Image (tube, rainbow, N blue to C red; front, side, top):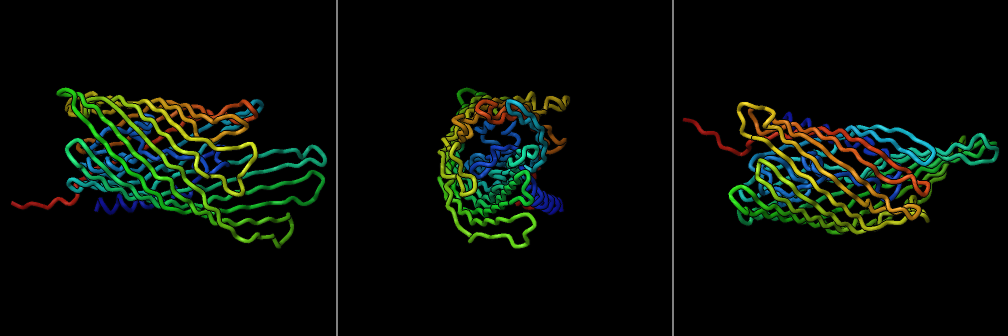
Length: 409
C-alpha cells in the first residue's frame, strides 16, 4: 500500500512542478532559459559534488551510481527561492516555489536502474520599460514563461566491487512562450507579439565511478560522466495583434533545430565511507546552438559553460544509539560558474555557497534533507542585472526493500 501512495503522490507532484515558473531571472530570456541543477539536494548541498558510490541516496549526475544502490529509493525535492535583482539605478525583489526533481532507483544485483522527471531549464521573466510620461516615446513589456523537462531512464552495472559503469537515456520536452507588448504615448492602439515554441529531443549520457581504499578507513573516490551533443526540435508559432483588432495575424508555423552541447563532468574525492568526504567537481560544456528566432540579439553571444565546485559532508556517528544529533549528516560547498552567456561583452558568472543537513527518519534508512544556497549571478556593469539570491530547499528520500521473497516458518 505504501508503494502505491508514494508513487501516486510523486506523480501528482511532478505534474504540478512543471506547471510552475522555475526562475525569475531576466537572463532566462536567452537560449532555452536558465539551466536547472540536475542533481538531488544531497549533492546540491555540497555545491554539486557527487563522487561517492552511495548505497541509499540517488546520484542523478552519474548513471554508474545506480549499480551501488542496496535499497529501492524514492526521492523528491523542491525549492523556495528569493532574489534581489538590481541594476546601477534600480532594484526589485522576486520569489518563487518549485519542485526540482522526482526519481526512483531500484537495485537489481550487479545492476541498478533509475527513472524519473527532472526540469532541465526554466524561462520566467517580466521586464518593463515605462516611458508613458513622454509624448511619442515607446513603452515595452516583455514576459516569458515555460522551459524544458526530461524523462530519463538509466542503467548502471558493477563491473567489480569498486568499479561501476552506466548509461542514461533522456527524452527532453517542453514549451516556451514569450510575449512582447509595445505602446507609443499618444497613439491609441498598442501591438502585441506572442511567440510559442514546442521543444522535443532525445539525449544520451555515459558514466563511470571508481573508488579505492588507501588504508583501512580512507578511500579515494572518482567520477566521470559525459553527455553527448543532441538536437532539440523547436516547432514555432508567431501571432501579432493590434489592440482592439479582433483578427490577429498568425505567421505560418516554422521549425528550428537547436543543438544542446556535449558536457564532461569530472569528480575526485577522499574520505571515510559513512563518516566524512571532501571532494571537487569540474564540469565543462560546449556553447551549442541555443538561440531561437525570437531571442537572437546583436549584443548577445554564447560561450562554453564551466563550473568548479568544492564540497563535502561530515557524519559524526551514523550508528549512534544515544545521540540523534550524531546521526545527522552535515554538508557544505562552494561553486564558481560561467553560465555560458555573454551580454554587452560581459561574461555572466554565478558564485555561491551551499549548506545542508540530512536528518534521518528513526528506524529507517530514509531521511529528510534541508539545504540553503546563497550567491550572486551577473553584474551591474555594462547596464546589466545582478541577482543576489537565497534558495531554501527541502527533499525527502524514502528507502525500502523490494523484490524480497517472504519467508514463513
